[in-house]
Amino acid sequence: MKLENLSQGRLNTTLMGVVKAVLDYYHLVSSDAWAFGGSGHAFLINIHEQICPSGPYCWKYDGFQKLLRNLGLEMTDLGFYHSGSAPEERAAVEQKLKHALDSGIPCSLVNMEHQVISGYDDKTFFTGQPWGDCCGGFPPATLTFGSWQEMKDEVHVNFFTFGKLRPADDRTAVRDSLSYALDLFRHPEQHSLEHYGIGPIAYDNWTRAVAEHGSSHGNWWNGTVWSECRAMASGYFAEVGQKLGAVAGQADELSRAYKEIADLLSRAADKSLESTAKAALLTETKEKEARAVNRVESLLAALA
Image (tube, rainbow, N blue to C red):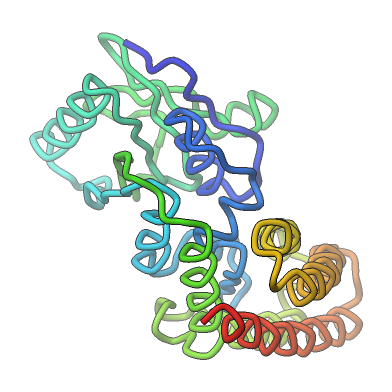
């Protein structure tokens, strides 16, 4: 069986690729930018102390999942599994996934990347490939029942289901997302895991690590993902200005500010950029984001 019209796009932020696929499946109309902004992901930045490429995946999802409800989605975590998970544990979660799919409910997994699960046959689940087959088959297009052999020796996976809810009105969605944006930057420790940093701590971690790890794959991937998020924040504020005309001027200023931040993060992704120059660039970006967050606070107050 296969859910029709459930297909993951080419977003580098693969969690949002899954979310957008599910929104489209449920006919919940949303641009990429509105999905990023309304879910709060547009305002996230998470950096490991060694700029590990796991930064976009290893953070506390609870605030994000709460905001998804405003977009009309209920994301339910079916649990974490690893190479030592017993066959009966694997069979149990597979049965939950099949039951959800049979009921027309999309599913997903995260194991290295987030992938939508759109259906199954008698041997495998069908899993989304956000960049097609351009990366040597990674991430894989299937997940074999029982063995999960496609994951090889990298089994550290969570599974999710996505139910449909009634979306919040635009004003509520915007206010809640801006509150989350402030909390990410002002109280980053509440959203991060050990050895990772969110918001200003993310910039500090990155700046300290560039001398040793600034030319790494992790540096490039973090810059790529977080630049995409800030570009989506820019687009989100442009839409906020269109939908909530009373704050259009403030929203347009924020759209321009986050476009600048996105451009700076794109430059920071360059593995060849000399470490001293990269550290200075990141310091500048942190300062610009702090000023933007202050403007977010002012916009939120205007919407009270």
